[in-house]
Length: 307
Image (cartoon, rainbow, N blue to C red; front, side, top):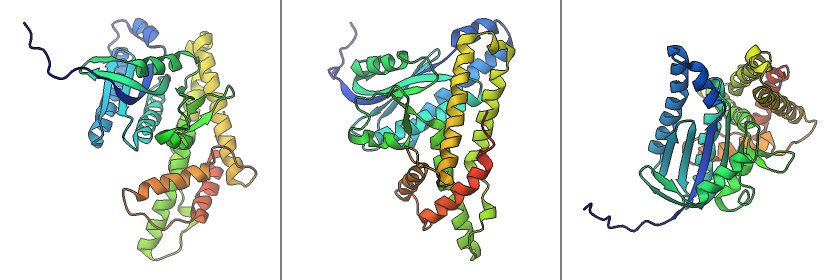
């Protein structure tokens, strides 16, 4: 008889991200025995596994990952003060990585009780995250509106935006731009301090611009791809990404040029990323003027990047 475990199973409050790779079944079926296609499928799954493991190893907080076929779930103990930020960082990065490899992602983020022991995962939290993923058709990651502004979830405001229906979603493109503003300003100021000179606006080579250009090219190419043009379900998802891309660029450029201030504000988000950085590593003394200078330089790069 197998020895009974000493510890009684019990729930623990967790933050969860339930992620689904769209079109996985069709990709597998179409791949057949094609070695190259099989490798592309393996690549995204391996990247997801490595990313989850890397995030787990980076922090002492209890973070766990579960992967089965096209589904990946990440769970972080809700009691950890930075749980929402940790989870949202991972989701943002995974959305960017997946799209770069030609995959669309849809998912849900929720908080709830979970029982996790090895490969056994169950609980109301997982069901809630799964249900959130099922209520949308577009390639978005929905954040549970019931807990959007509660407790440590306040960090969500710096990673998310609300859809027209009022559902908060992870704004991976806007987050990348906002983080690029802070990072570029920090690099420019450090360089100026090291050289003993004034910051030169011409130094700005916006870090976020490369990904925005790649994002534009990936979506634009997909919209004219014969493979997708005749598959309305897939083509409509890329059409949604076109609208998302153009809206993000226009909102950013309008704020950088002083025409309007969107919610969430790119400037406020960049300042928040700077504050988070100060907790971990010393940073140069950045003023709002430094961030604005970078925003205006970035706007010149990003203005033509609509589709």
